[in-house]
Image (tube, rainbow, N blue to C red; front, top):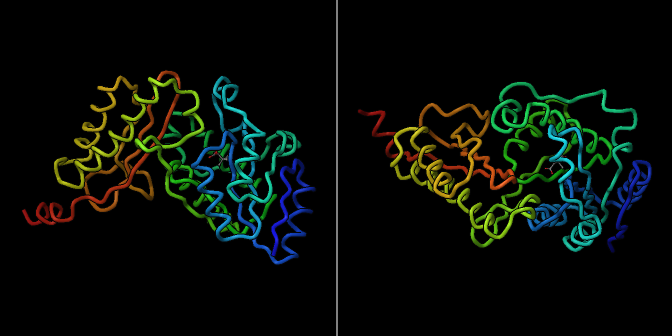
Length: 299
Ligand code: PAF
């Protein structure tokens, strides 16, 4: 079946009409929500969606309710024409580019909020828990508008992925949530729309984030670190050496984000740091050395 390509749709009724026709043709719908400034990481999400669905909707919407800092919202890169071209080249069938009024036509009186550590720790603690309320609310609205069979999210935003999985389960939203691995530059920097704001020197500095995560993960897997704190100290030292201001560097449960009390099983290591005035996040997972665990248990 030939794929019909409509570059941009801006209103909810137009998108619904377009998708109704595509569903009537037998296409399933994959959805990739974005805030624009697309890069290869977004393309990996779009390509994953295109591999499984006849119709792929990419939303481009800089959601004001998930920014606590007005200056951060103002500075967020906006590159609409380049985004449309990149999305279509990666396999999108249509870009949904609504205005703020289209998404919140009567203002934002209703909030979807996931309570507890999933929203309050790490990013929630640094940015304010209303950040994830903003994300959960806009993703719910977008899923209701699109009603996709599956929606695609990057593992770079591991906490966002957990929050989304939780409210989709709790609200019984019939969309499958698919996680796509983080895409990195050749030298390891996790791709992010914010990287555009790094100078050349800051880009080199920012590489220390992936190095710090890798070193902490290695210290856990090879048994050099005897506790989560020791692994965190290893990572923080690398950020300090690179002159990067660390906001958090934490070893946690990958499911609940509770702070790890011991090195046991699968762990998530998450980091947020400021390079100049650009705030970056990254994470990695690691399995604590099973041999050492067994030895510790026996002693
Ligand atoms: O990850 C993002 O770009 C945003 O948080 C999302 C999921 C598009 C919601 O605005």
